[in-house]
Image (cartoon, rainbow, N blue to C red; front, side, top):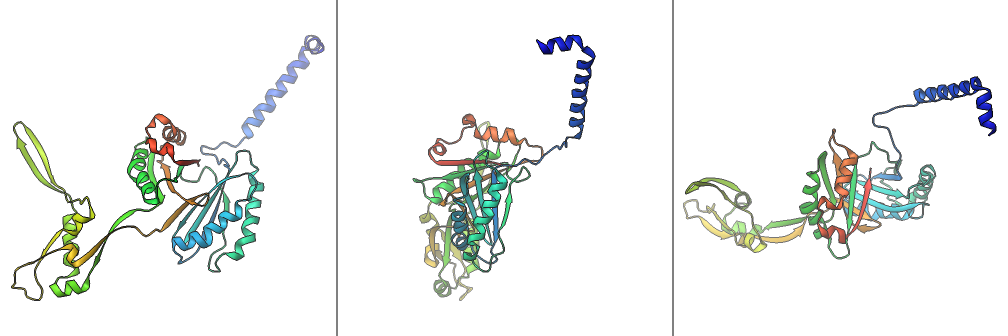
Length: 327
């Protein structure tokens, strides 16, 4: 009641008080810095280490793994993800929301300093930074599984998730790292080539020609007109091994073409591409999908579309250990 009496008895004083509050608010509003894309601090710290000339596996064992272990005791740490590629180790530490990131940054630097002497002498000093909104990508998905091997996990990301995410409005690119990529390796038997007078280039050209899909025109069937393509894709390793190669015998140019199968002059192996990038989640092998937005893309809408269950992600993904990072 006292305040009400004062307001009634001294209206001019109350008016001046309100005017002062409005004036102070106006001054504060105009002094605030406004940015179209302001830097916002997230609970993420990255550790980038350059190791010139080192392969990804060497970096994963000698650098990334040791850095992961060193920061595992930092207060507020939620998870650690590392990517090891040729010449570079990138370790990303995600912290619980509300963590004092300045304190976390200091603890991380101290933890790294304690083990830097255990790292190879050839490395450059690790660079430790806090992430902000200027960092790409706008969203990362890290997949880990106890039932799928590294190749199956990579196939899932490449064949089912990458294209699906790329079709989301505003997405410019989806990059996949980690896991094993399937590769059919053809190793030439030099002694067999010499015996048959066949050049390695001839084998290469024959294999390349047999694996190309070519348009072969159109065929009319009644009122319909159908496109015809010659498919050169192989389904099994056996099909590749039994591919027929027909070339002239260089030891006797006038002779009839020598007809051999690929398995007669080469060995065919169902293998994986040599890894140049390693992705790890909490020390275990993983596959990472990094979603980058186009210039006109909306980061919030992109993240919302991909994370929504009705987006149609394969049910298999829900059975994996999946971590998301919003940059």
